[in-house]
Image (cartoon, rainbow, N blue to C red; front, side):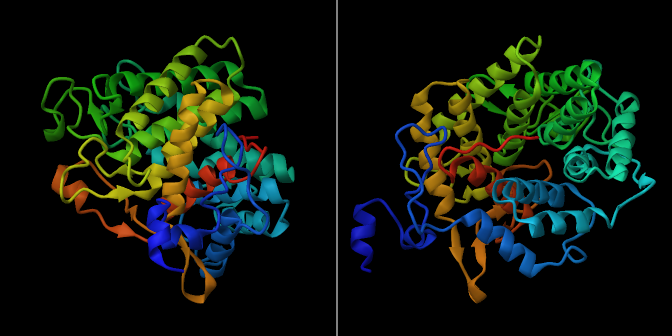
Amino acid sequence: MSSAPLRAAGLSRRTVLAGTAGALGSLAVPGAAAATPGSVDWSRAVVDSTMKRYTPATLGGWGYTRGLYLYGQYLVYRRTGERRYLDYILAWYDRFVTESGISNGFTDLDAMRSGQMFPLLYTATGQAKYRTAADQLRRRFPTYPRTSDGGMFHATSKTGQLWADGVYMAQPFLALYGKTFGDPGYCYEEAAKNVVVYFDQLKEPAKGLLYHAYDEDGSESWASGEGRHSKYHWARAIGWLGMASIDLLEILPEGHPRRRRLVDVVKFLAAGYTRWQDRASGRWFQIVDRGGDKDNWLETSASAMYTFLLSRAVQRGYVGTEYGPVAAKGYRGVLSQVSTGSGGLADIENISEGTNIGDTTYYYGRKRNTNDFHGLGAFLIMNEQLGFSGRCRVLT
């Protein structure tokens, strides 16, 4: 196929190879076409490829990136009913969870993310050890250190620090625990309060974005200015908080006193995402509001997270249908980074490696990985939302 017609249509050769670039699924994207016969199920392709690349024993140790990815694989299992997908997840978790639960001090929020699966695995299997592990993690929350306004430290070693990433690591588990095991009072309130506290400390109303981190006493070098927050709007940090807001809204009942604030968070972010979306690619930059910087680059995992929020927000009625085309454009943009590589395995490109707090040189210099688990997990969550007509994946 000549490249000229593709450029004329606003498509790349990679987009055509992706197969589902035009298959936007009617779910929460009004006016978008449903998946066409024969189009690639990229969720299956990503999961199958990952399972070929890694056994449960070689997938990696306990950590948030594997928990993120396996949650995405769980969503694919829920849609397809493929027992081998669940068995793979169980085999990984059973490296860490025994009949006595799990040996983990949970001294940072990142360590909690993989616990999101405990209630889900208990529900799927009925095995008591997953309830035991979930109970252990739940008991950690009352004693976990917090800022004066109730925000959980990013880590016990990072006194007074709130990183936007942190709410997604801990709060969806807490809310889901409350729903699954009949503990809604504390769990719903604490989870929702933390999202609101983080948002209030990190928001930049003038741009519709969030800063990466906040330090309560301003003693960190990156928090020396007014507001005691970091200086830049790093894309994935904002995406984590957005997904946490959506996940909690899936669980909190109508009428919960904090529900309205969470919807407001989603509206704020949806407007910011729309404002800063790259018009040419449909994706978002590593530092969201500095697309003109020569070293800045379009990052895939955050783009998937933003697209997921926009789509689910339209579907649930949190924002208007005018955001549907923004989600559709974001979906096309993320799919342009997906292809079939060597050995027929799926590849996802331009995913930022794990990232601390830094300056522009630091953010722009992060490795642009292929098949990094940050991106694989975010892609699966997004694709299970948008890639299949008339279906919706939720937490339970």
